[in-house]
Image 1: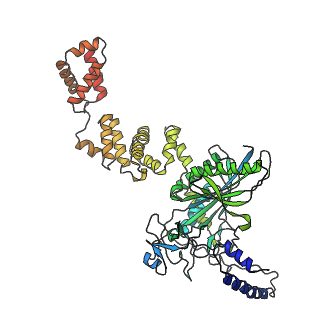
Image 2: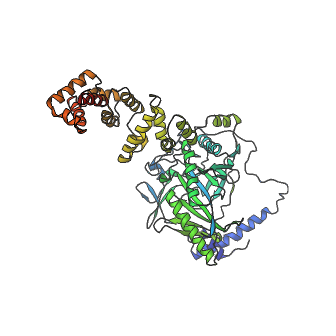
Image 3: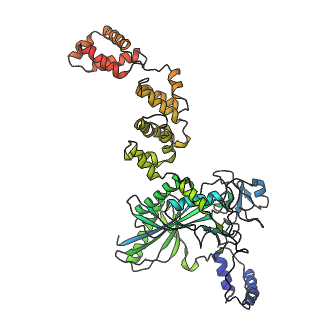
Length: 96
Length: 470
């Protein structure tokens, strides 16, 4: 896969966040490492091997009953929130 | 219009459950923000989803009502995207194996609109975009949804609205959802393209996101078909894109084009094993399907109501339920319908009160109707009693406390008529000279003397006889 700094910035734009030049350069360099690691997987022979999504092959029949089992308080929910406003979590504005 | 409009609709519908799709936190409406959540909804590390049985049951009800084929092996997939309303970084949905497929909805015209699929997924957090920041409420995160996707079978905004209404009615009567667009429990995305009449292929389609009212669906379709038509007529082409409807300008605006479309990198959700639905449970659900609105309307007509009255009663599920409970207590079916459609709905409209919030009790209304029927009270008195019943009182109690029983004792009424005529001797001459007003006067005086208790019909009969000397 070909990639360069412009490609990284384009990806960031699609995901709607801003990258500085430095961050884009670092991520672009990280891509080289990542892709080299992924190339290693090509060495594994996967012929006639089906993709695996689940660790077990058995089906289950379990469905949870519709009863409230656990709810946390607003204080607990907001415990790690940096900025809040009347119980709402404030995040930077990113309009989809 | 030189082109045929081709419309397909995706509807997201919140299921009416006690808890969320994948967590045991409560589903609420209008509760304090971020107070109806748990660690699963907030995607804390190490949390695992667990599928809500009632959500699956309600999705199945929707599938059966829409004539879908059911996939009895329930599987979920991940739709990956990075946005603040989705703390896991992916939404759990059913991309590859929807629970229902190949169904259809019948429009009021009899036209069948094919459904591509019905699948289950989870709602995202609610966001409030302010001028300089976005505020998040996770109470909605994880609320069970079904997405219902039609084939591109609709040909006009009128058909689109008919389709949404039919679907809304089905979902409401199954008790699958509140199905209220104004509260966001139903949201629509519309796919729209144009093609020359007689052409079999499809033009480039544009998706309009998140329409939240029937009026906006109509406006968006009208605007968008006009916009695309103009482009074609000027020799330009329509680009495949996602647009949103802007309420203020009543136009659609571009959000993203095909080039910048997101790749959701769908893959099977490994944290939920495939779940096999038992034949026994499926049969139980099918055997206990709630009565559809259509069947109810037909049954009401069978009881002797006009099609219009039946349609109005069924148009609101709580009103239909009120009617059905009331006719358990009285056989005056038409009178019940009248009191509900005229007096009760009139009151609700005037007070802007939902039928579900009425204090009026079905038994009290039935008793009132019987009291009129057996002539215990007059229809004039009935209106007065009804006003009290709206406060939640019982009919018998009101009538008793007001001493309101109607007097149908002919001797007593005759004695009052004689009194009136003795006080106003010229009435008889006037009446015989053709002054009909004399009759009204006598009846009015008798009602006054009896404090409204005299049976008006009987009074009128007796007064007529007295005046004409029969």
